[in-house]
Picture: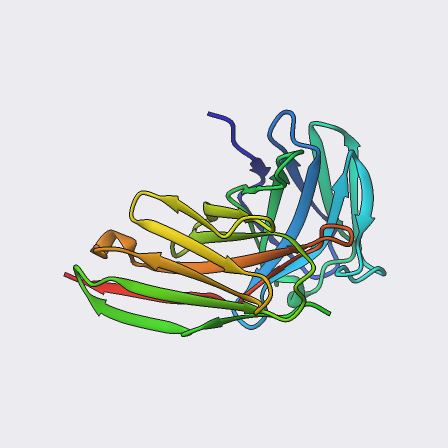
Length: 113
Length: 112
């Protein structure tokens, strides 16, 4: 049963600390998406990759967020320095290379105090 | 800029009712539209995917339709059950770069 995996599932950190979230897309999928979900804003697209190349990261605060795909089995989202307003659930999704149907991971619940 | 709206924001129905959830979008240049279900505190589960060239898709008690020209999609749930209680989200992926925009969701509660 192919699934998107994300680590860690929960993260509590203090303001100013670096946070790294990891995602393993479904094998064979060629697109990876990072989303953030909050009660106020709903689901927002932060960045996405196709064939490991970043296509659009206009949804990310550039000064503190960065997203990379060092290889086809790993996508990372980093926040440095973290702020309380970054508290949210961060989802990774991978997309089927033909239909672009998206499959979501379980999310990382981030709390910045 | 694509905007996706879902109506109603919340819905409460008795068990057994057939119901329709609505999704509208402003830019018809879409690659596909996908319906998801999200249970409280959980991730998103894909329900149905409709490609831009398709008019509808069916899975079990669910049927989703797409009318690109009017910028609308509907999710029809037949014979609703308490287990259908969740938030339903529609997501539109555009043709220019495959950017995906989500609606705010419809929170459904099915009473036993």
